[in-house]
Image 1 (cartoon, rainbow, N blue to C red):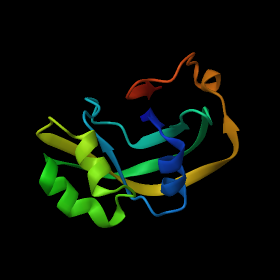
Image 2: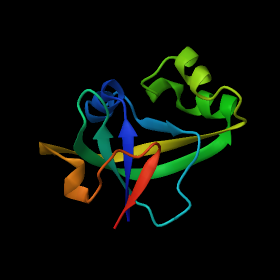
Image 3: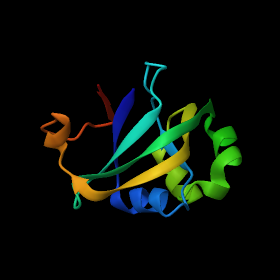
Length: 123
């Protein structure tokens, strides 16, 4: 199964150039059969640009996740702490094999009319 994640274009680019090896989330999908993430680059791109396999999902307190992932986080510590402010738990999706689409796709190609706030299951 796949999920579609909305990711800021600057971070999406870091995923596909290999410098960002973890995608951070405040919540994670309940379905444990999710194996791939389809990447929707949010405004101003507003296109689905590729996908990646999920290698692992780390779940721990905010400080521990940072210590385990910071080298390949693709973000600053300040940004990370701001994102997880007032949260006790953090999730880090470890990025496996990446596939950049030759041609970007529209959300309508996935029967979606708008980008999800966090994620959407794709069947």
